[in-house]
Length: 124
Image (cartoon, rainbow, N blue to C red; front, side):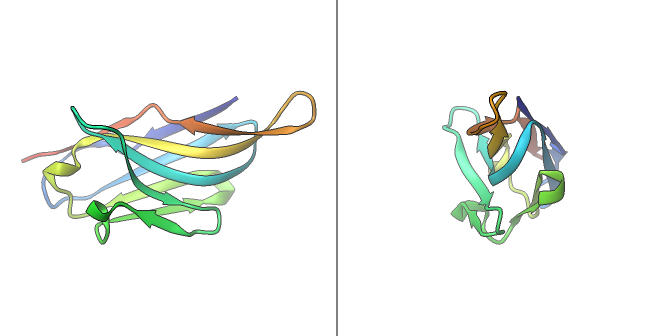
């Protein structure tokens, strides 16, 4: 079983910064793509940023130049540094990871795992 634990959300004024963290734990052989999604009230969940194990990154156009995704492979942790925050960034942010886990039968399998979500509110 694999769990993702997120932290770092909260209330921030426009123009401010926040840093989100997400740590994967459990029966993990490797973590492949790690990413952050967000869902604002009344809207669909959307990809914010993703990063491969080799540090190739991808960003939504709306956050390019303001957000930076990074990871620490040794700790199975992904970060999202969010700068110049805008009210439109208000949403629940979810961590998502592609994880290779061990099975009780000595083989491995690939799982897509989601975190519980952390609320980011940008307001004055």
